[in-house]
Length: 413
Ligand SMILES: [Zn+2]
Image (tube, rainbow, N blue to C red; front, side, top):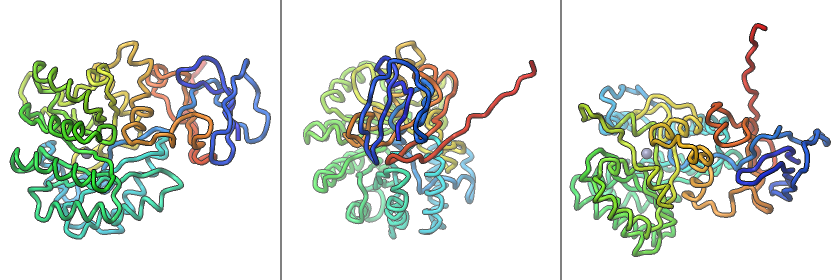
């Protein structure tokens, strides 16, 4: 299969991308627009061709459960955790698999082929984790799934928390998670980080911690995570998710913190729609946005990307799998609608996310890499966001996985 009349990000002109089986065989500059020749030519129509979108932060075990058995009436993160604890009592292996697969279909419909899901392991039977390990195999033809062992109710604060985390990694989780700001005390938060970094170092797993997901400016576990990563030289394998307290840190502390963050080399995930919904709930006016410093992290040369976090769960009632919706909202929320940000904003849901997931040479439009790519509906990043564009075709392992027909408008002449 060949993709013709393709634009590539950061390279002028048009290209023909030749796919040979499951790999990209050649990328050939085209002097002019060409008409489709062979029956299996796909015409990009002078629009962008990019590697697949990435979902770096979602909770597939919790999706599609909002209102079961009760709605989150306060809209706070902590009531969400309470509502989820109720729903968790009725989850079954089959229930989790069915909802996860339904959600993955929603992600695939929007051009996502790489997913990192957090899975709650604060449950003695590890039912969700065992189900998700099966889902990871069942959906290999659709997405590459990374599973985070996520201690929703704490490692130190939950009975047998350490043993459950260790068992989850032994069963097959790819990534070690954490939630230090939820632990009962600051000391427990610090101890949980040292424990989970030891576990990751021992097992060779990646790390992704829900870190400082609170408006409390005294929540300062990010410095502990970054220092652990720096000392162990694990930074590129470590991710700090949310870090929304950073939006409430004062600038003097943050300028010191950024020195450490840069030296640590860790990655950041922001879930801007989720955070602006859950945070700021204890404020009168002026009301904080409750998101991390995405633009500042990016401008300091560090790696940051956007995730959806929830789709219709106890924490967030909306969502449809479309990561472009998160990108558009995030650019607004994070003050990133400047000209230069708009020129390269797709980085926040493609290249930066792939780096967070440590995808390496399994990702990107380069000869020899997997034939996984998207045909988009616009010629550049700016126009893609402005027009609220879509992924029109998703190709995986050299075959069409999803094809979207844009809605047509008929206007009276
Ligand atoms: Zn999360």
